Amino acid sequence: MKPINVGLLGIGTVGGGTFNVLARNEAEITRRAGRPIRITKVADKNLELARQVTAGRAEVTDDAFSVVSDPEIDIVIELIGGYGIARELVLKAIANGKHVVTANKALLAVHGNEIFAAAHEKGVMVGFEAAVAGGIPIIKALREGLSANRIQWIAGIINGTTNFILSEMRDKGLSFDTVLKEAQRLGYAEADPTFDIEGIDAAHKITILSALAFGIRMQFDKAHVEGISKLDADDIKYAEQLGYRIKLLGITRRRPEGVELRVHPTLIPAKRLIANVEGAMNAVLVQGDAVGATLYYGKGAGAEPTASAVIADLVDVTRMHTADPEHRVPHLAFQPGAVEDTPILPLSEVETSYYLRLRVEDKPGVLADITRILADQQISIDAMIQREPAEGESQTDIIMLTHITREKNVDAAIARIEALPVVKKQVIRLRMEELG
Ligand SMILES: NC(=O)C1=CN([C@@H]2O[C@H](COP(=O)(O)OP(=O)(O)OC[C@H]3O[C@@H](n4cnc5c(N)ncnc54)[C@H](O)[C@@H]3O)[C@@H](O)[C@H]2O)C=CC1
Ligand SMILES: N[C@@H](CC=O)C(=O)O
Ligand code: NA
Image (cartoon, rainbow, N blue to C red; front, side, top):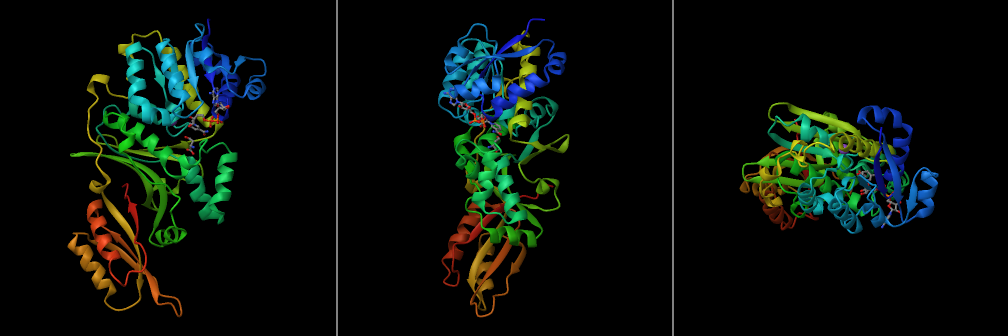
């Protein structure tokens, strides 16, 4: 049977994994796809690496544009990364009538509206299962498995690097920098690891999931993005004492006025399954009105787990490329004409509960002043702990957990609390999610 020819752009961590898994499982994959899938051409600016990995089994070049223009190539896999040359190559491949598979969430979150419109126009497929939560088939689940549901919210641990850092710091007491270096060595981190640490990578991914879940345009520029770099070990400890774990979550929720789209460290009850997802593992919780809560768990980063998703897309394209484009699953789960312009809500309108840590002078009346301010802003307290000041210390920490309230009420309360002379430091505010 005539093979389908694939051109691979970038043979680094994921590209190398894809090349190797495809070769190793060729017979099994062919039985599924109906015909052999062959990577016939590989482009990498590091020619030496490309020669080493391919070992004579594919033509090698350092000119990626020659691959997207090659008439023999049916599918282009983009595994270079970034929004620059990757965007040019993907758009060129589409313009040349090639199907595209990519793991590049940054590219899709920022330029996805343009790329999917171009693909729709040209009648080609763009597969991106690897772009969110690596090997976990979450795109497939949202596009197909859950299509009966009105999705209400999604919350996910969707960055392996930061989850690995938080887990290793907590369990082994290792420093942030040591664990980050290990995550880089293991191939989890982005080329620029600030994308991981500052929550940008998770925001790219939750932007994509939000579009798929609610049938809205990608609006990465409206996402609230907060990473783990400012997270204090004391808060991890206090959270544990209160029965919570802190995870970097991507959250998107549908509300009558719009959609919440946010990434930030989040307190989750320790008894929830998702609170116990450790290391580089990912987990995505999806709440649908009919199905209820469903949880997807697995490896979100690394060469072969990500290759697993890339190859699943290759199989899908191979099975479907001769089908009438109107009969294929729509790229973003909803028919292109049915995508809505629902606004992303500003952070001030987000509704959730909060963890507040206040550094205060240990004297009578302090608590009364603080609770009065919270009550003025209609914020009610769910739980509280006050640390006993150490011998000779005149200051102490008060930790308060609130019921659900609006972010702008918390902003107003914090501004007034910080103005109190007895409050000695900036108030620490972390958001909480029950996820139950
Ligand atoms: N590493 C992981 O666990 C995961 C990565 N991804 C995404 O997969 C993509 C690839 O990531 P990695 O494999 O980790 O990156 P990598 O840095 O290991 O590989 C990228 C490869 O592209 C090559 N390259 C760079 N510029 C080029 C150009 N102009 N022409 C030809 N080749 C060029 C590099 O030499 C390198 O071999 C990125 O979009 C990343 O966000 C997605 C999920 C997981
Ligand atoms: N850098 C990412 C890789 C996968 O998307 C992560 O750590 O999750
Ligand atoms: Na995936």
